[in-house]
Length: 142
Length: 229
Image (cartoon, rainbow over all chains, first blue to last red; front, side, top):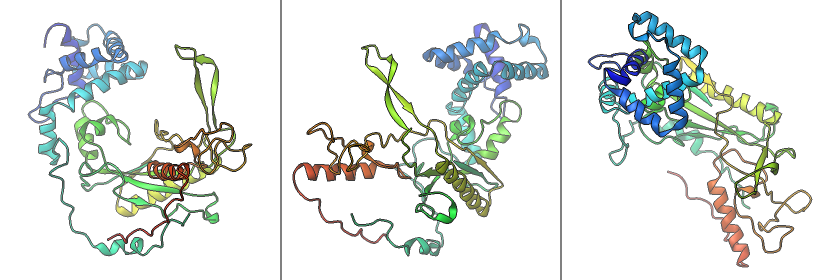
């Protein structure tokens, strides 16, 4: 990634690194989405700019361990800006179709509404409900 | 709110978010517990991927090298029990007009004065202990508490209380204002306590009753509900 989003892409790769066949969030091109989302919420746009401007100017040339260190210091010293950046990153990442497909492969989670297909409840021993079924009414006549 | 973390899969992303299991075992007053009235617990399923990553009812999933491992440890492995206590009335809890803050038309803003009572704090502590016991017995390896859930105070109740005495209440038993003729207040503000549950059904019942009284007729006799299968 080059251009104005290069720094943001590097940051995203450290926040949400590669897993399996998926590259990190920056390598997936999510910097554009983060910028777009931030532009719709002024307080997040400010947080994003504050976070990026607070990073060392040589962040891109730092080894990975020092990038992590720089981000940890940002989290410690500018928590509001960092949380804004993190919310933008997680929102972009976990609403991306490629990531949701990966989660589905790993866990069986299927994105989308549970209805109308629904889920079938596994059979269980209904005797566990007997105590509740035998309770007296919990209401009183008015 | 208590959240249990389990080693086994719960697949909590399936099904409805709330009300899948409701417990009113501790709803009524039991003086041996050290507080008046009681609370309801409601099982809440876990979040989807985004909600899980942002924290849901646990801490946010940390960023960096451990993110994906911790995400998979939590996702579909948690359940939460809400502890909704009956918030008894206290005179200092009230809504007043702010003496200085106004909107753009000069109308005074509402000022909310509220504090959590000692009775409610005892109920919360008891409820969290009950929820923790339930999760531990169900096999949770970790249970995380939130004493008060941020932003969860969204049932606005009891600011125009019902009663016979105009000195201590705003409306009478028919939801009519003591002070203003033909003014009826028909919503959750006439409640005399907050109850310990979601209020919509009771608000609807009060509204139907007020309408019956307004029309000059008696409310229909209470019918016993059909037996639940």
